[in-house]
Length: 122
Image (tube, rainbow, N blue to C red):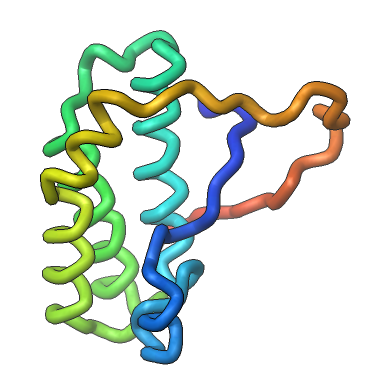
């Protein structure tokens, strides 16, 4: 079960935010799951050894595809392809290998979530 973590949604360069499909929160469920897999790896949480950088990218892509197929978002293959390419890149791979565990700040009230997401698919 995922624990608390900090996320910025999608780490999409700010100039691309003007494009509707490239909102940092447009595919929030996919971005949160992807970030959680990185958090598992960096903090060495139970089960982290089952995942690789490539699997994390594929999981994000599959969540995006599910959102599109279910009608939660419009079908947008170029965005799916470009975002998957970005999270499959060497830059992302370096972050996977060398990133640090960044738990939520000390003193944060654990009973109050930073953000709450309900992910449901038919």
